[in-house]
Image (cartoon, rainbow, N blue to C red; front, side, top):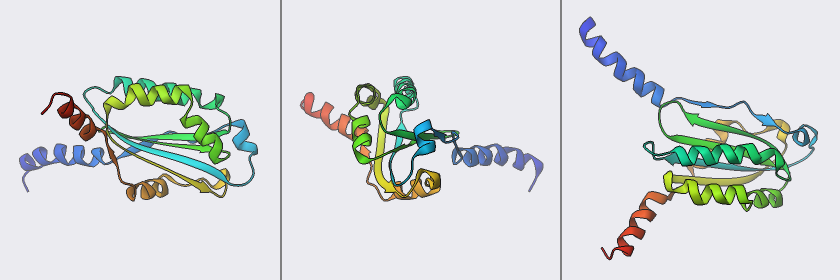
Length: 168
């Protein structure tokens, strides 16, 4: 293969490789999480976001993450995103299912869902019990679980809603 041919292929290959890479924030454990003994509840989300207009989504995600330490039962979290692309995962850990439900119904989370969802193309949600925060699941385990979850296609819902609204 010629050097000229390589200079054409290499950038495309590098972009394709990087598009498949993702980074996760270090897992943050709350003081209560450091002390917690026994099983925990884990909530995970995967969202594919409109890359052209994701400011509201990102802003609300930051607000939700900032609120976590104030939520009853919060034990820890991590966020993961694709290096090149518009895919985000969250993993939050709670002392029990009740406090996870309480968080989902919290004003900051409800506002994020209401105002950030218009930028979401598809999303997957899962929750499960785990033996201990000390042995929390790996991202590969969480992503594997999400692969079996049917996505919610928000973009298609918006399109159907628009067609109904305008009588198309």
